[in-house]
Image 1 (cartoon, rainbow, N blue to C red):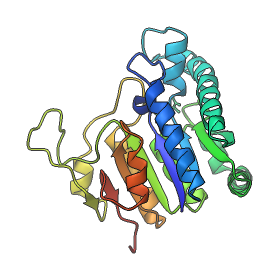
Image 2 (image 1 turned 180 degrees about the horizontal axis):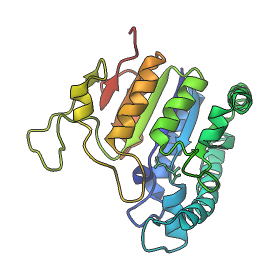
Image 3 (image 1 turned 90 degrees about the vertical axis):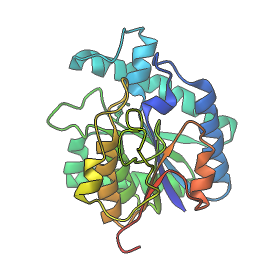
Image 4 (image 1 turned 120 degrees about the vertical axis):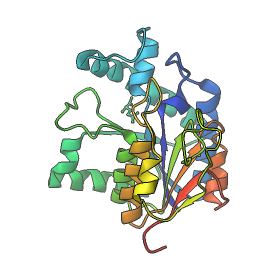
Length: 256
Ligand code: GLU
């Protein structure tokens, strides 16, 4: 299977913005093992801004664009250094691709992005993708990595898109405030009722939330790619998802 895994900042970093070492080590171990089992994997990783915040000892996620872009430049290095080190321990080669919305709007650049992804997979490398936050401006920003994950999945002809988050999946209401909230295990179509369940934004360091995940699901489902939202607290959950066990919320691909 060709699988795109997207991990959010809340999965990769502690609330301080510093790396969650145990979590990231486990993630790289499980993904390496899935590669060893013959799956092709692409990682869409957030965490550049969050980790830059940690490394620069900033008081929180910056509000202004220059500091955000500076934090991303610092954090992206830290991220790739960590992935390179951990995947290398398992004999896997990583490759970094940073893109912006403008790259996707331009046919030639999108085509090159697509070709690079395919060639990296042919070469057995593990592409790790993030938005190029240090140069993206508001007009061209993709804005969130859930959407980026879905775009990558469609560009690489993925069989499955997995979004690892700090929540178990899509609930009928906010589980933090509503005790009657129920986890939906399968979503067949994005209806207005489903959209109404998405609530507000996500964590303090990341960008997403349920709205961007539903947006990603819309893109993936339409392209015939199933998507799963699951809790990334224990990255071993990837084994269950790949083996088709019911975990989190599964969004069925169109025509499934
Ligand atoms: N590209 C952002 C980062 O690496 C994350 C965007 C998101 O959280 O969706 O910090």
